[in-house]
Image (tube, rainbow, N blue to C red; front, side, top):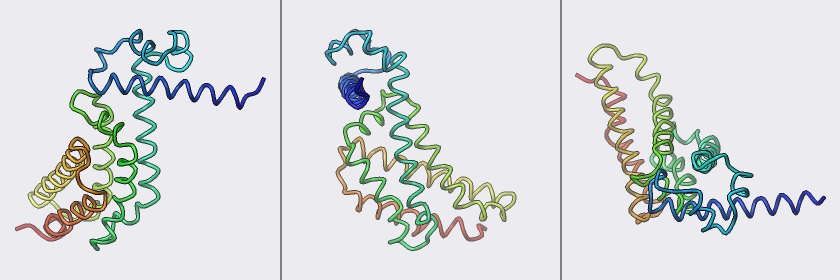
Length: 202
């Protein structure tokens, strides 16, 4: 048995399943998609589908995890830029991530759509929150009482604002280049909120 041919065939079948699913998922909620319509669209039978996935939840989770893993890998490669206070360096953190999103534009637009499975958006937000928490850990450790509360509120504003900006960018058909969006986020973080967070609040 030629395992290379078998693995190539399995990969092609999996890609057919994913493409057919995403075409349906772009228009419908997960609960409105049925394996019958998916397999018909992919040109396979139900048995072939179950060779690859347990159910539709397993399929969408697999798609989401693959993208989250890819973003996590990029994050590790450029994470040191995230702690810079220089505009041009801080923006460098976002550019490869945004370029990857552009390369997978259709997929990310579907995963970030309002009717999609919430897991991807929540995981994306959690990753951003973890980054900000790590960046501002030393600042928060030195604050107490009302000062700490105010800094936590500002951090929440920065996180949610940047996440909303990225989601809007994806849902708006990526109408800014990755470089433009990275520079914009760098400006909004470093030019005002960061100065407030890292200085005492009276």
